[in-house]
Length: 313
Image 1 (cartoon, rainbow, N blue to C red):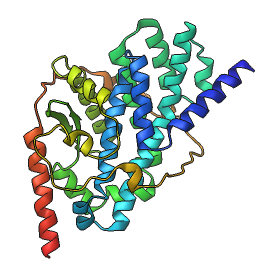
Image 2 (image 1 turned 60 degrees about the vertical axis):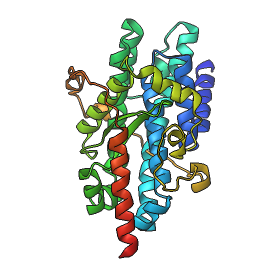
Image 3 (image 1 turned 30 degrees about the vertical axis):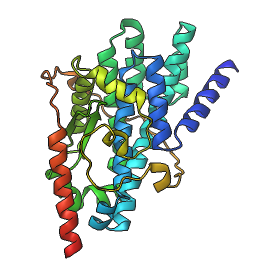
């Protein structure tokens, strides 16, 4: 009976935290503040911030000129569904860990009831025994990217109408898709997204972002941004610290979109069909933090001229 109560509480907390992009970002950050050994939570919060910025871009004056409303709505649904799915899978695991940490005893039977993949059950056991923070972060990256592979990336609706479109192809090859880590000093760090349709590429990107985020030269500056900047989904969250502005509008997410209801029927354990995962832990080349502020400026200049050209045409 006690286990059922714990499971029920975890599901309820997850549901409350999974309302929208803003609530997810806040929950990830709050968790990391209390459990800094779980590095993935901070990485997830920053990726969630980026998802919010991408969502509200779709409602900005420039992007409304560049893409049709039906495609814009579909892109929003893609961002929203992917991020909802990751939170629905990962946050119960985080709450489980916090519960066991407070009790100073791991109850692994709860993981099965929380529908955690066999892969992550093994990795949580490994972490509890050895405390390898880097491996756990990588494991969560692997798990979440495989978790969204079938219900989102290979879902017929998104595969055909988003990831197979010419517009998506052009955006990716023009390096218009990126994940950024802002600072209050006005510097921007980050990486652009390539081959997002491929799970291997998404895992590689996640590991690169993990390495960049926790690089000793910049980690404290990025974390300070998180601590002192309330997420709204608007790019003004970080533009307030820059010496320049795009000139594009950037609405707050909760003013731009209504809440979206989701369901997840027939959740499958991806790790029962994917057995070779150790290759994803191979050592990466040491990443060097590079200030991407000017690069980001150039991308927004390109978008501005595309917007102007489209308006003239």
